[in-house]
Image (cartoon, rainbow, N blue to C red; front, top):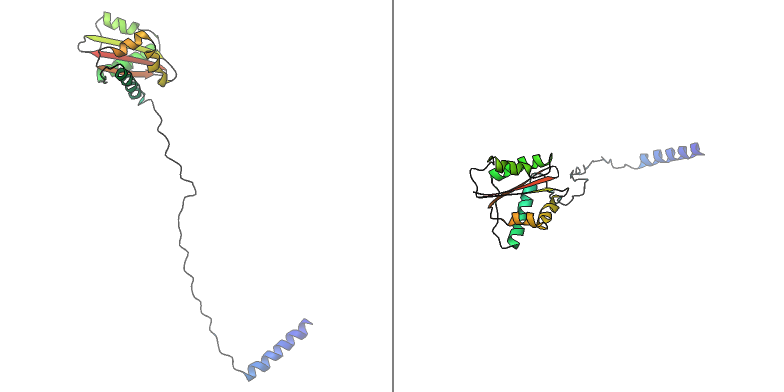
Length: 171
């Protein structure tokens, strides 16, 4: 059947094309615009993370906490300076080996404190896994609170592991 149909179509086309002239159509190709590549991130933007307190700024956090406490007692703020910060760093390392005030007292007795001169000095020490609990712990201890209230305009708190040393100095 297919052969007969194809033969009939071929015959019809031959007789049609001999009687009629078909216009010649030249195909034209109209180029489509090229797609524009738009780069987008496959990742969903995330909010900026909250800064985390690092070892480098824990002493600053602690000094702010001490000054908050001092203001609550109507006392002037204290500031850190190199003598107290260097000594606090040394003491924090020392108390990690022997947790007591012996190194502080022995320096008083031997007159080997790292200050050019002094009229008043104080020390607080703490062992705590949370730096945020250090100053509140001192506030709740009468002796430590008295040291934070003392007239020592220069104070620094340094840490070594979970050990904290507060050194106060008044020239």
